[in-house]
Image 1 (cartoon, rainbow, N blue to C red):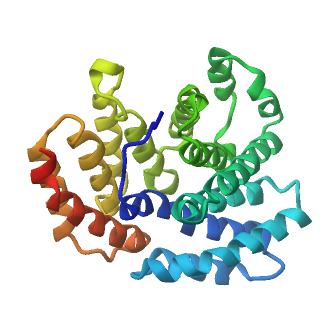
Image 2: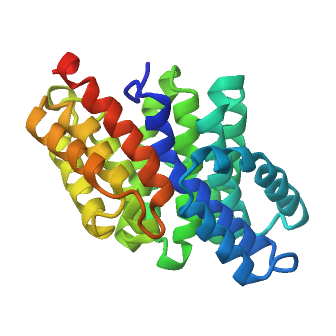
Length: 294
């Protein structure tokens, strides 16, 4: 059973690309301090975030996979580095794993790294897998703001693996736990990474129509908050809002307005340019197919 709506390659890139630049920055700053100065890592991160050609970023990703694997091997108890690894393998597995059949393997590593990261940052998390859902949600409440990076890596790694193995019934059963982790992250620091968790929660809450248990109005609130937190600079929030909510409820007016705003907006915005290039490509595709869809 597929839990995620069918999406184009550009759509997948637009949703998941934000993690690539962030985890590169995390990986360099937390695990490579002895190799690369902090200023250099910030420069690399900025260059990725403000890149207008996604292919350049994509071509460089495998080098970071090898780099972060090696660093984790040297420092297996570095929770920040493991969280970065979870994000990087999640991104690469989703972006490119489908093309070579490695998505499940790559995202399984992302999930393992994320689980190890949160376990090291918060010892009780080592036993989360044994808890029932209610106890798991209660356990999440014990996390503190300082553990947000590891929690994000944990949620990202798990979500990427669920996407890669979405034909499994177990995937459907696990989604509420991932959503609970993201909800806790938002409660601790909703502005983390520009409010990106709100976009993912918006998507999760709009996977099903209301008649089948979906919560599209909850989704709408998340999308609107994501737009607010980025000051409207993150165009991918509007694309996801249009596709996940607008198409679900057949709200053509909202759908077309959001996508038109994305197409007319400048892509260059400090820290968001890469996301915006991908989002604009996807907005054009969605708007072109609107007549057929609606």
